[in-house]
Length: 265
Image 1 (cartoon, rainbow, N blue to C red):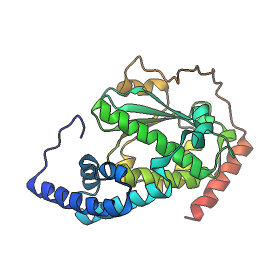
Image 2: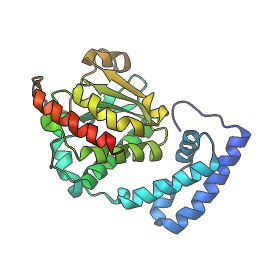
Image 3: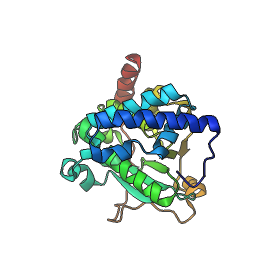
Image 4: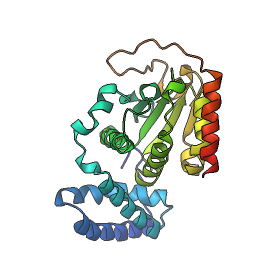
C-alpha cells in the first residue's frame, strides 16, 4: 500500500473482506469491465476504511459516492484536448518530492485569472493531475502526495469569485474520495487573500485535513520538509515576480464579498 506496511487485525481483515465482496458485486453492475479492477483495489479500500475509522457502513457509502462523482465528472475518460488550456498554462505541475519521497504537486495561484475556465473543466483538470500523482506515489512506494499552494505574486487580479464553488467541491472530492492520499499541504506566502478565503473554506475542512496544512511565510520554511536545495520550477523557466501591493479599495471589496458569502453558509 505504501512505504509503511500496515498490519491488519483479524477484525480489520474481516471488514476488508466484507467491503471487497460488496464493492465487487456493485462494480460489476455500475462499471465497464476495464474499470472494475481499479474500483475494487484493496489498497484503496483500506484507505477508505482507515479514513472512516474502520466503520464498514460508512466506508461502503463513501465508496458509492466515489463511484458516483467519478462518473459525474467522467474522470476515467478525460481527454487532453478538453483540458489543454490549463495544461498549457501550467497552473499546476509535479515538482520533485519531499524528504519522505512523496511526489509534490505545485499549484501556481497567480496563473489563474477570472473567466478563463468553466468550473467543471477546472475540476476535471485537477482530477487528471491528481490521478497522475497517485500513479507517481504508487511508483515511489509512498502511496501519498504532497501539495504546495504557491501564492507568490498573487494579487486581487487573480481573485475569482467562482473559485469558492470550485474550492468547496474540490475539498469535498479530495477529502471524501482520495482517502489518506494527502500527506501534507503547504501554503506558501499566505497573504491577506488566502486568509480571507480561508474564512469560507475552513468550515468544510475535516479536522484530519486541517492538521495537514502548514503555512510557510518564506520559501526557506519549506526546507525542513524538502531539503535545503529544493526549488520550484516547471522546467520552462519562471519570470521574476515582483511582489505587488494590492490596492486597499480592492482588498476591501473582496473582504466585503467574502463576508457576504460567509453569511450565506
